[in-house]
Figure (cartoon, rainbow, N blue to C red):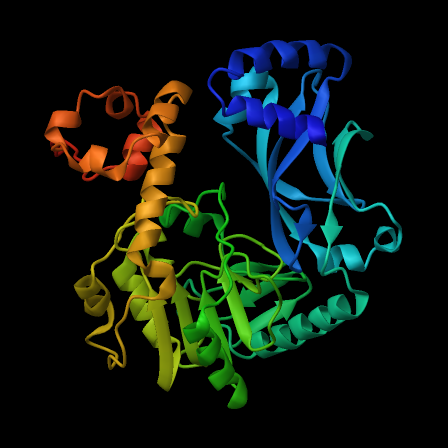
Length: 428
């Protein structure tokens, strides 16, 4: 919808923002709903599993149920903060990040029609829409993916283990939608698509919260080579903390804390629900910063890896705080080696393409600008690198673009953080 793009543009130009607010107020008088999509920017959903991001306005909700649908399929989405749109529309704006599974869509009757719009639906009525093009909408591919997932589920039944008691020799029992451990009597869920080894007690113990962000990246060349080597040997690869991968791979077992379209098993890294030494390779790609205890996770990754197997691990060093769903530890190169040096032989240590310093520079600068009020953001973006480096950091502490950075921005980009603690006195 072109109107949404116009308002989005106004929100990011300081002198146009007040005009945009007046125009929005008038617009909402006769059209109380508006849908805008930022991602994909070209309106093309390229992968079988993908994300859509944007915002919608529902100025007259009256406690109506608001959902997003694509080709008749209701999408799972989480609300996200959109201060840019709120500058124009205020509290009636909801930012969203939604997960798209085109394989699911391809197997529904609506997939064969012409209507592939993303629709904003209020109490069963379509109130706004945005046309999208789904490149991966293929019934044959969808059926093949179902077959691959079924084959992986059969393999998993022979190689899963209870994460509650770590019983390795006692097989699990699969009955309908339940999974039982014969050793400790623990029970888990079988959702039909995923095996759920993430009970509420694990969520509490390991501080697993609902997702408000999604890691959605393709494999780099190193990861691809690791997977292909395992495939050639007829083995399996564990993608531990996979996030949202763009397609289903019969060689790769995806473990996550959320049920994304590619995920096979729900579980936590600290207590992997697999038998010892069952994977030819393990991928841990930008995951260990998101766990409460990376050392226990490292031991688990080693435990499930076959002798002679390959571990490919990436972990951030200089990155802003970001949650999937939370962020605890970054590591230097020495820190990464320390996680595995007692158990594994180091084959190669390198900075991957996704870890080049330009990523850190771009990430920090873009986040800094995003977390400034509009006027200070404009001033900041007009500065040159030499304008910043010409002064000491101490001398710039009182600059408006430093003082007015949002609290979220300060936490996300902090050079250091500090805390005061108190030891609670024991009761007499």
